[in-house]
Image 1 (cartoon, rainbow, N blue to C red):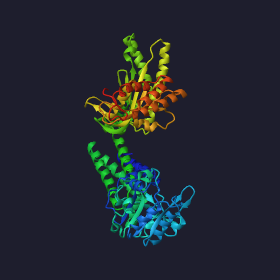
Image 2: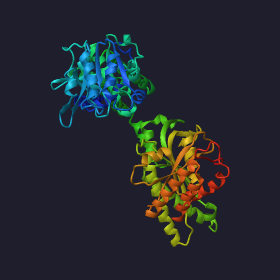
Image 3: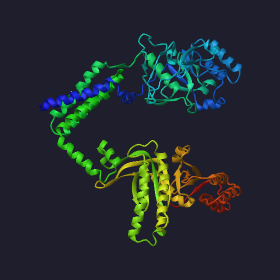
Image 4: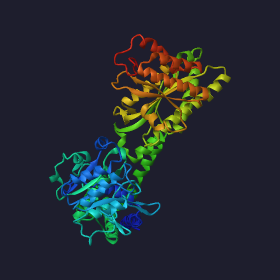
Length: 632
């Protein structure tokens, strides 16, 4: 088989793979995420206005749920809108009594404009939860269920379900029923706040002029964050009532997204694969075909963006897959020797780079250059306490053996819990979690790592005791925050590491273990994630202002052993002592700290007693329980 025939076969094979992905919708979820990025902010229809039940409105009217007479007042103050939709459940009688319900019934009876009340399908029981009959008989209804895709994003809605219509469909006056599809893709007008939104309390008080609502469709719904009616959409988080507003705008525009027919898609996939193979095989050199491929790839995806703006959805992932596979197969066929060299480089790198870093560089070779990325990571520092005392009486070779044993134990514990050892600084260890590969459970893993380090240290100390050697004691500090991670150094020599204030703070926490006499201290952001995990026991230690910082931060002890009843009682006395300490009640604080010490050794209680000796005589005028450290 000649070269042209091989390349043609490779292109067809690439098209066959991409065609199968398209036919079986394998790329559908990823394709939806691509389409999500095609939406741009539009000029929202002026005929739709939202009245948002925000935090200010709820506070002003005495809390949630609002009185139904409040909704009656708002309906009165709207003047003459085209229609009103209330995205609030009125399925149960008002807790404020029958008069509250009667006020809203009276206003619904007077309303000359159609009012739509929200119903809700119970998807588990299949029941439709409707408003009370006294409301339903005086208004229209539309179900307010929102369809959420598997990835948690709202993209579509059904205008009708069984014998009921959706909330937005019940409000749509300009929708052409004959062209509305059974499943409507929402044409998002923009991010949250795109539609004119007026606070509920302003309408209730009559400060919003009625002319604003004249001949407009008004949607009333929750926008307060505490009500948790917030949904993820392609254009960001927004309240449920805003989703309904976008759905209504889509219906009234009578412009609906259409899909490219499957037969045409398969033909385009074959064309995409052929174009890539021809470009690679015909154009000489290496750089030029890559540039041409990039231009063709961009043009193909740009065409998809343009078609999307015309409400045609062209699935570019299948086209891109065929294009990339075909180009890749052809490149591999033509540059076998270069591929062999790359494999040799990979083999060579594995001896002095961590496997995780190698895989990251293989996927993104451009990261071999200097620079970094902003990421949220969890950083840990560990250091030996009393290293000078420990090293006394040991020869350099004996000390080297001991330190290597120690560092091996600490490193294994870190790596087994997903951490990356950044560097050894003498007897200190710096590590981090969350890079180069993302780790959504990094805070939990760093605490698991800290406990594993202490357990490894216990085993090492037991072995050292048998050999008649001194025990090793360490301090661990860990904190989560935003840092820069990547290759740092010079153009000739660089390391994969992290930099930023949070790195410094984690180092400070490790140093503070000496001050408080504990083994491990973690920052507030780390503690919040692991606080409810039964695998960990935390104790809030202090509110501190470390050197170089302007804002105080809470710090917590990660208890590295299993506390018994006496120690838990001790923790309770400490917490009560700290509460009194923050209030400046020194006598009460001393009592509790001494009670804690009566139950056993406790470094933090000692630390606070020493402070109180000074503070009781020199209490700052602006005392608020924050202790400032003036040294590192």
